[in-house]
Image (tube, rainbow, N blue to C red; front, side, top):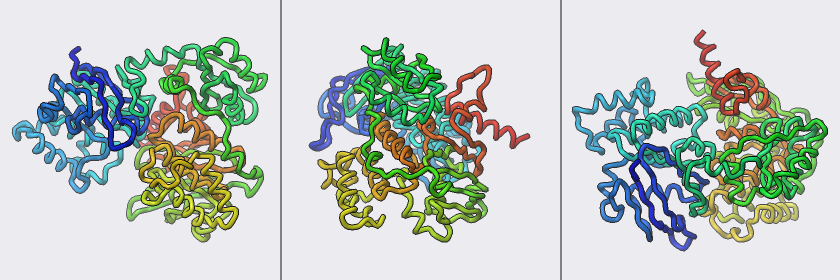
Length: 577
């Protein structure tokens, strides 16, 4: 296989900040899918822009298809396909009009266009939507249109900057299938992603963190390093979140997450032989500890030195709420929302007791965000009823909002205000006064290590700190219910674990959590899940119950993603019957 990209000692800085890329070297070969893997801020987008010739390194060299990016950036840009991270098409143009525009920009001969358009619309399954405005497409369909525009003149090298961010599992699989077909045709694909499970589907990965290249090679070469050190603790007795927290406080455990009713643990290399039996005792006399195949994320966390402990100062500082208080904390009864003739959510019904994590899952455009917004008072229902902490969302919106904390999908704080000013503002919004207000601001500032950043504008914070600030503002007033809309999208795995350590601790104190997420492994933290599809709830149960519903001879141990996709396919088949 030919070398399509050669990176030699690349350094790139922006202002006085630490290097966005720090002495990165490597090569990308033809006919492969190469993953640029790492959290937001790792340097992935910077590296892709250097490969396009849109940006030049401060030092080092970039050669793409044997062209030097300093000497011939236009030659590189004429030979590659590039799909930027943010939707770069025109939302007020239709699918076909966007294709026409990009065909003009790419110089596609007019006599070739009909055949190319037909091929790409068929390939991306967008033929039915050629006349629809791009702004009216779902997230997954927008990404498919972006891919089609990047492929108008089939490139030798295709650069995709986080094409699956914010995209549901079904659309992600569709995108991967399309990209795998391109690789079979000899196209070299670079796929940038913060989803570590996607790394396992690549032929080769560049693993980046804070501008440094930590690993390059086949994904299996990294996961093989921790074989025999990853365990699954099943059959546990008692509260699995408490058991996980205790396990994480053991010196021989470097990482752990919930996996349905089971607990996934990674042992230190020097402790992998004798320590597992000691850890298994935490689960009770019937608990079983078995070696399980490692995942790429397990290996990445190990490479970073391990995850955080199970200890949460935030939870410790939160008052205990008794399980029997007020019955169900969040209730939806026949909740319905219409926008004109379109029904976004229909007859959604569930109740969430105190001290439970409840997940809303579904494809883009399925109605889960509409349901979520109705229950936190941001949208008025067309029909049905919703209650939070006993308050009706139609009559008592203000009272209900004072009992809940809300963390939006996109950073929703005030970017031009400093960290300190955001904390002061939201303390006022939630009615905190006097000494209690000062105590809570000081407490969250200490817990989330805000001291060095208090005077920094919120918009200038790294993503992980932005998410910590959003969570701090949401919990300052000790809410009974916490609404989390894709709370950890894009953050590094250590910050994700720290985040869930706080959430698990709060739940043990009786806080009730409603969460939406596209991370299927995060769905495993939920006690129950409602799967929303075409505006209706099509499945309700624990993660293990939903997985059991789709288990088969061919797949006896399905993942949460397998369950998500299979249940939606079953619903489609039932609607056609």
